[in-house]
Amino acid sequence: MSKNKILIIGSLPHKNKPNTYGGTTVLMQDFIDYLDDDKINYKFIQSNKYVFKGASFINFIYVLFKSFFLIPFSNVIMLNSSINGTLYLAPVIFVYSKIFKKKIVFRKFGGAFDITYSDYPSVLKFIANVTFLKSDIIYFETKNLISFFSKLKKNVKWFPNVRKRNDNVVIDGVFTKRFVFISHVKLSKGVGEIVECSKKLPDDYIIDVYGPISDENINHEFFKNSKVNYCGSLKPNDVKFTLTKYDVVLLPTYYSGEGYPGILIEAYSLGIPVITTLWKSIPEIVDHNKTGILIEPKSISELEEAILTFDSSNYLNFRRNAINKFSDFDREIVNAKVMEDLEQV
Image (cartoon, rainbow, N blue to C red; front, side):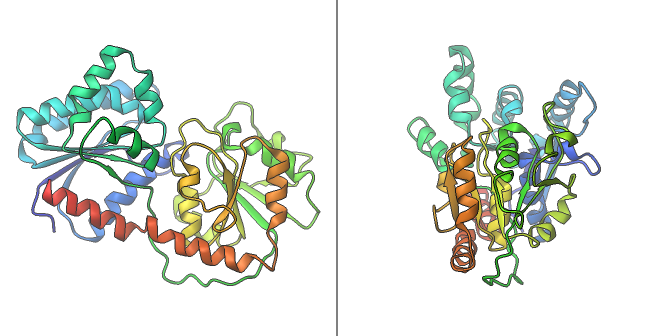
């Protein structure tokens, strides 16, 4: 149990609202679950408590109101922030925490904050530099961000995307030519390339796509005349079970905000290899031709070649490498280190 009184601020997914499930909210929920499982004492403010249209300002006021009462009675304030929350909420929380001489920890989700920060006009960059980027600990998701901000700031640490270990995984080499995409269904995640590639594959290959459609250019008709089956959205608790039905995860993404995609970590936890792209920080977590295959973004031909690379002779090695790679993203190991930081800050 933590000796510090920890106040955590972050966004969580809302049940029965698929669009609230994403990298940021799922990671936050995972951390909260870890604290609950280990019976660690904390207070929590949900920064996306309201999800109706135009609720951003209401959420901002809600967090400030709750913070006003809780920060004075906390020792450590941990702000978990997305791109949208960073610029507006983080400076205010930082200043208020420091007025009461509290330790503050800033955790930035995603993998593109180096670009966002570099593009800030001078006044916004100044605000960031004198507020939340002076936090007692700054956590980033990718090693690329660690490298970038370590040149500018102290106390920068790695807090990667994590998942809970599965103790009952059986690693075999049975390859059934079943491939799956699980993410938000939009063009920038490579769904169009998957559809076009599928038209070139032999008839015994299966490609299923799961996730909420979040792109106006995609509807159910989009998948017609291809070998791709759109299977709708999944409940979060169904993701792991669904993954076990497939051999390889597909994520040919070129999404601008990509960090460490959670579905790749989830796949590793089950010993499932991946096909994904040489994009942003993804190569940091995929060992090419070992835990998966890396291809150029938007390359249909490379996607086809990668899919056809897997066979019964190499699949077992891919699976063994994937499960071994998962140790870097084991929830118990990573979060235990974070709690040590919070105790010592």
